[in-house]
Image 1 (spheres, rainbow, N blue to C red):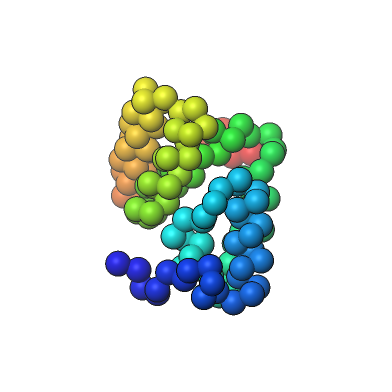
Image 2 (cartoon, helix red, strand yellow; image 1 turned 60 degrees about the vertical axis):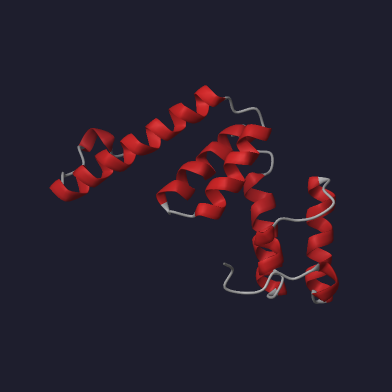
Length: 131
């Protein structure tokens, strides 16, 4: 259950409607997902989040599918159920295969395990790993 009500477009402040219009135009969709409807209560935060997301997830040295897969991995690490689902769907829409998804989950699980062990053991970082 959401901690704030999801706003319908007609009930949003005008500043939030402008951001929602940009999201819909940029993504070529008729409606936005619930994340944006919850953020619409805070027009400044909504705008900042959308502008940052467009910048980071836009064209760059990393392939869009790779970015989505990284987003999934970080969302798993942060235990964000919403982001896990939304970015997994986005990764599949960008061409991720079932086999790639299974590999991604295996890598995330392995990294979580070895991170926990390295942290518990307080292993000093090898000089060869330092830039």
